[in-house]
Image 1 (tube, helix red, strand yellow):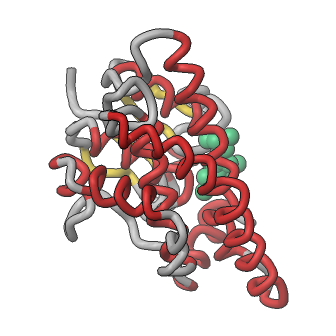
Image 2: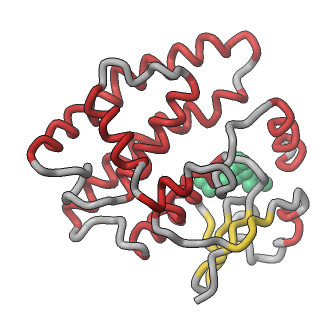
Length: 221
Ligand SMILES: N[C@@H](CCC(=O)N[C@@H](CS(=O)(=O)O)C(=O)NCC(=O)O)C(=O)O
């Protein structure tokens, strides 16, 4: 089967977690189609909700970010060995989605709300979410290196992505979470992930003012 083809604008947004998962699985992608008129080129039913992200893979035009992520996690053996492990992975990735959504939409904050929103993000990250993963990490001292089933899964990849997003908000955000600091170092050195973290990979930079304008123009909001 050919390489997956990603359809999205040339920025992070909802597609970034998909790029992470494909990169961690060592899957090369065909060039991302980020032509601002792409929504129009798919009229007529081949783009289910006429929305992106859309990933062309295995003869399908997959849409809906969570559906795409689940398909890729299962396809590349990153979704647990059984339904119990899958449930643990789901609990971790859905909790992480709540935090990553806050950070993803932060650049779109109204001018007078940026400081308040950032404060809320950091408070949620350090009091609600990171303590959960720090506690889970405690088992790392019992010979386990990963969140679920003692092997790399979608949950580990998503946690690393969100840790780096939170550090972009506040570089010292992991102070007080020594096990998460070790987790970050360990997962970052997995060869496929280490390559994705190098310049020149498919990884996108945080949204800046100019890319926000282009997103608003493409999606008319
Ligand atoms: N639930 C969908 C939402 C997708 C979505 O809203 N996509 C936006 C682009 S973005 O918000 O992800 O940048 C879009 O295509 N909007 C165009 C439209 O809705 O017509 C998902 O998770 O994939």
